[in-house]
Length: 159
Image 1: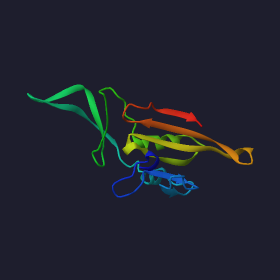
Image 2: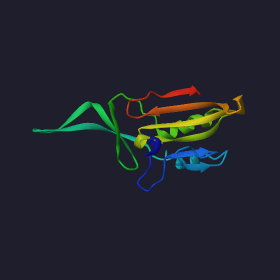
Image 3: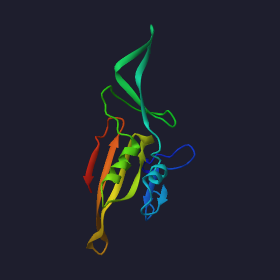
Image 4: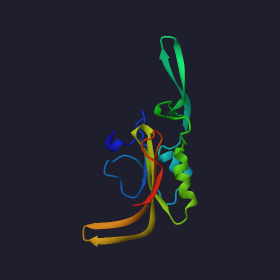
């Protein structure tokens, strides 16, 4: 996996972008103004996170670990992480829905990393860039990122 972008068994990268192709060459190009449903599919975020109690094999048989759950992908049943029973799950599609409610922001990239353990959406704040010098242009973005394995808190921040 180049850049840790999730690549499915069929070779489809779980990454979508508007504009110039990313340095790693992966992903699905989107047109500005594409629907959130189209983004969800192109970014590979068209699955849900399911949970199941953790079970362990002992000499006496299977034992349930009541306060731990394994989170797994609904599309391929691959495990994503083990979390406490009160862990709040944010679904991949909810990351994109966040941007539907925020006016004036246009999605530029979205996708998953590490097999779906982390996912994000990135939207441009304005069409204006700031030119720092001849070789450096800076634009404003809003990033919403999270994980479903407990390694990253859900965070919305300006970048």
